[in-house]
Image (cartoon, rainbow, N blue to C red; front, side, top):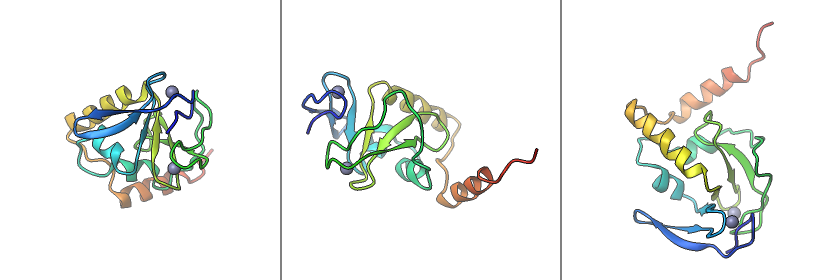
Length: 140
Ligand SMILES: [Zn+2]
Ligand SMILES: [Zn+2]
């Protein structure tokens, strides 16, 4: 598997007990389905679900669009845990994530903040309700 940014061959690096394919050049990493929860957690709730559920997949980031290193499908941009401005790439085909080098530290910070606040990542139903209100036109 090659890095979607610079084509370097990804190396397997361990995060705790999770082996993650990581780029030796740009430190980006491919997270297979389930691995974001393992690498970013532990936290109560499902970070992956909260990140992609009902996301518009229409976010801007500094990195531009890429294709999935796992299957070549076009990846969409998702906002980690809905509203953090940490934009990850997500493959709807294999449900994997691409996380750029500096994003892991930001995600770790965010999860630490949530844990310190004894927060749970949003319940799927609450996410749906808040997105409903978020999408309503604002009164002017
Ligand atoms: Zn790379
Ligand atoms: Zn994929």
